[in-house]
Length: 249
Image (cartoon, rainbow, N blue to C red):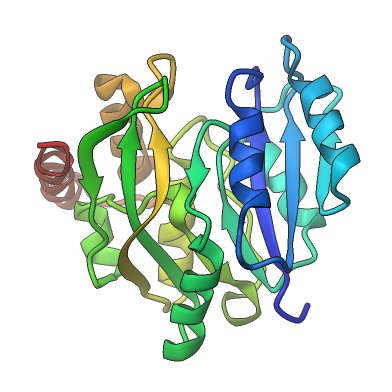
């Protein structure tokens, strides 16, 4: 696997944002990567745009699904095909700063880390910087993460030579949260690089934009995936709610 980074990018009706997303990968100072874009049966012009981008750079590898399978399974389709030692995640409406991979991989190698994430910026649907910067804490463990789901999926890099193979738990949403918990249960902590290396686009139609729905899905991870008892679930949920409000103040 050497030092190849496999970037996992699910796409669904992403014609408005996918080109900017891909360009942020093409601008990386670290060049040993493959970008696996899995289109989950988009109904807009996404597939044509993805095909045009792939024709310009062989590191961009599109996968066009024949039926809609949802975000978790779409990611798993390409995780199974990924060739990289490192797995990184970038959704089709988000962006990376140009030194994201170089700086984060250096951080991981210097400290012999298997699982890392970084600080990131929230941006509007039109790409304008919002006041919110989500700062990465120094370290997250299984129990601290249950109470503070601060790890941004777009910032995560995992060394799967260290963690072993993995897939996203196939649940409707919060599958990234469930995956981080799965890896932490294997004995790996997540280490934060407090440098702003990515931009998360707040889109009105996204699951995370609906706070009530997002909260219910976090609760479902506690009870149905992690099978925590109701008392500990309530403690964790209080921490989650407090930190969710705090990080957007």
